[in-house]
Amino acid sequence: MPITKDHQYYDLVVIGGGPAGLTAALYGGRARLKTLVIEKGLIGGLATYTNEIANFPGFPEGITGIELARKFEKQARNFGADFKNTPVKSVDLKGPDKIIETFRVTYHAKAVVIATGGKPRLLGVPSEDKFLYDKGISFCATCDAASCKDKVVMVIGSGDAAVEEGLFLTKFASKVIMSVIHEEGHMDANAAAQADAMREPKLEFRWNTVVDHFEGADRLETVVLKDTRNGELIGVPVDRCFYFIGYLPATELFQGQVELTERGYIPTNTRMQTNLDGVFAAGDVRQTCLRQVATAVGDGAIAGFEAERYIAEMEVFEKELMQRELPGMIYVYSPIDERSRDFLPVVREIERKYAGRVKLSLLDTYKSECLAARLGSVEAPSVVFTQDGKVVGKTRHLEPARIGAALDALVDHREPALAE
Ligand SMILES: Cc1cc2nc3c(=O)[nH]c(=O)nc-3n(C[C@H](O)[C@H](O)[C@H](O)COP(=O)(O)OP(=O)(O)OC[C@H]3O[C@@H](n4cnc5c(N)ncnc54)[C@H](O)[C@@H]3O)c2cc1C
Image (cartoon, rainbow, N blue to C red; front, side, top):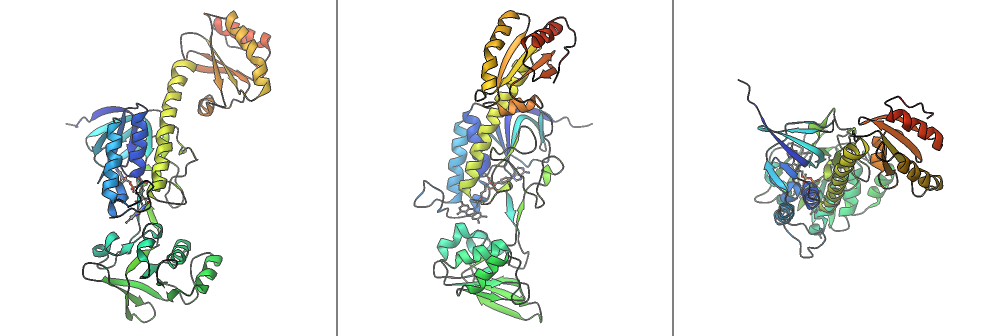
């Protein structure tokens, strides 16, 4: 017998409970949206992998990732957000009813924030697991450079990130050793970065090398490199090793639904909107130039705020603009446009004349850009006519007689004759 899944309904579902998702939930909850965070692992995301976050504003003495995550979670719960600890297995986000499937429950939401973050790419060499994160292998110079003062560090990689972050590390470390797989003088970074790197006296290159394995007691002590030309193993004592070999965004779930970049990130605009209506992305999963807790919470705040706005606009759209009780006339205008303003008194006159027979709504494109977009291609000033909850005509010809004739037709249940 097929198992019938439970269905639960939310205003906002946030997928991923890292800093971005928790902040989006806080904003959603505070705006009185019924909000759910679905997190498959530890609440707090990648930030919980680090013992000390020293660059999140408000904590001048630093704070552990776990403690910071607990505070984010508490604040989101205080504003009424619910939490579910389970992986999201699949989604259908294209329509107005967003569907999010977990093992046992099908969640329905009016809006979704994707905050699934990602993971730094690993090498997969022996003993790598033993030294990840606080034990010596790092992925973020911005996060960990300050703790490398006068230390010897190794950088793995030779792309733009590796070279630029390697140069940044020279401001702190006594020596930065770069392991480069290519022949001497060849890197994958842009030419300007390569030239800067070659000039930097604190940078030392190990050409034709790859990491063979790591050694150390409790912490990383030695990176054992392999010379790709002859297989020779070279032990290099270091205090820390930084990988800059790529980042894997957690976006497999969204393939074929949400637009992704070549590298799998989600492109958004500055309002965190994706290509799908009502679907927002925030934090590390987004195509962005900096992946930090501070940027993730900033994105989360915008995404939560925009989700609330989207839901409110959807309600206005369905209940007011697309109402079914009477034929409708929507005056689409912009308060900063003179022609729009000049026609407003005429619109008020029309409203008086057709009171009780036609429902008039005003739509300010300056304030409600998304609502205007939902009406299709309309520019201010124009008039849109509706019948039975559907758009039946639009015109940019603001002539009272023509508009009156169109309204008469609608009241008589005839099709209005309109020039676009
Ligand atoms: C070792 C380390 C140290 C760092 N140190 C610092 C630092 O000092 N300062 C700083 O500002 N930044 C630091 N960062 C970066 C910072 O942690 C990230 O930028 C930040 O956590 C991004 O937040 P996020 O919410 O976008 O994503 P994440 O923190 O990655 O959270 C995403 C969440 O989504 C969940 N998820 C993914 N897929 C699913 C699914 N299918 N279903 C349900 N849940 C899902 C994941 O389990 C995860 O919890 C560090 C990162 C690392 C790895």
